[in-house]
Image (cartoon, rainbow, N blue to C red; front, top):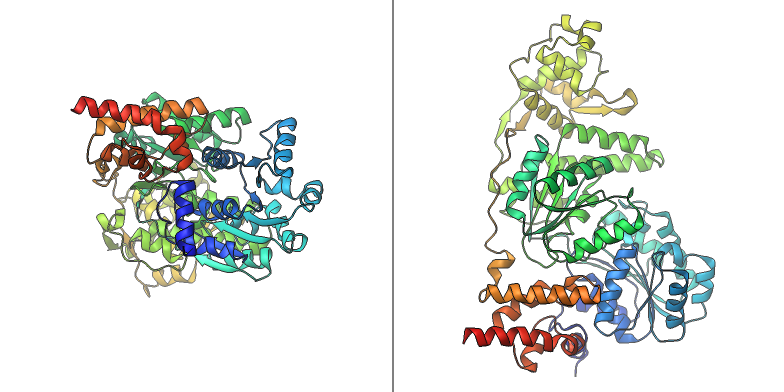
Length: 604
């Protein structure tokens, strides 16, 4: 039997899948050949199998470094469910439980050990691991090791010492988001350049992308969610207060909403995550404290109520939707105040000037994505140097924005900024242009300027949009050292001198009608027997609760859909279902056969 065929047979017997996903086999072969590897794969492409498979197949001691307790617990539960003996050590376990887990690994009862980077780099742990021959170190979420990355963590940087401490071990790094500079930094730190790099691509064609103006947020959010009451999703908020308020609002409107942020106790967060992973139609309302490594395949939408910090952060967060390959929606509400607040957070944050400049550039790229009149997917993936065709299903493709010449309004705004000394923020400039007799305008005699009131016929909403697009265009900039004052760039002066025209998109006053459920949705995939699918889901949920694991650990929706369509009754038929391996067959064949047989009898 050829090596590829042998690995495929092992895949079916142990994981229940008949074929590898694109790119998986190549990465697995690289690791089994004892070569270092960096793999950049979009969320949902199956990266965990790329390191779990060689760890099990080689039977060598393997350390898997993971950033979150929840991620470790989910992966350990999934592997244990496949009959694989695996250990984990983390802060969520008692001291005695951690000792017992270590003993299982040390005495060979298990050969796979999950650790956080913080625990791994402790001298005592390093010395203990040096007593063994460690065949493979897996670094998940590897972008955290790089200061060029969007989610740098100092504890991850310590992992650069592994190559010297364990020179005979293979280093396998995995991430869903890393631009060229970040990839080069990861390779250098983990392997000193000796590394095969696999970049599978960043395109997630099952995700639809949409950006909407941040106006009447709660009503527009409700309009988006109303047809999604039977689906699970994540709503990201910028602050803890906003998270709790949004959660309460959704609960009051009948949603199974769960609040999650770092201000909650660890026990609350654990229960909240368990609820989200297990309950149908759960909506997680959270700060960015939630989400890394979440392995829930049927998240149908991601909403950002505020501007994320960067393109990388945005890409990683929306990547949590649609991991089962089915259609999922993403929506970002975007406003001028978010832009200014994000810039302020960078200005007041930690890091040297070079780091802050890099963060500004990242934020500018995301603002460019928000203001783009082209295909959203094209705009997003161009950041990662990936070229794609227009997606045909983002908001800009479905309803191409109208672009008009707004040079006259732009000149009024730029003139107001100039005449007030380039020392005031957005709100005051708009008040001056619209002729608002505010105390601030009177105190500074701005109500006596020639420009005062010359834009009085224009709505505040329109003026905010034009200022936002002038900033995105580079004609204006926000000076945070002057408390958010708007300043004019050379490009802005060119518009003022009429050397350049300013073309901007017309922003609609209200959200477009919510799109109907896609014909490619999960429900439409059930060609036969939707009532059987519902019964199989009930059984799966009961079995999951009995075992205290998320429902997808038992079987994915994709597996249940195939069961509902094919109604497999014999052992061979059941084993032929995608996602049914030998271990799951032995555990679940009889309870599922009972439901399937009962359905068959009723149909006959």
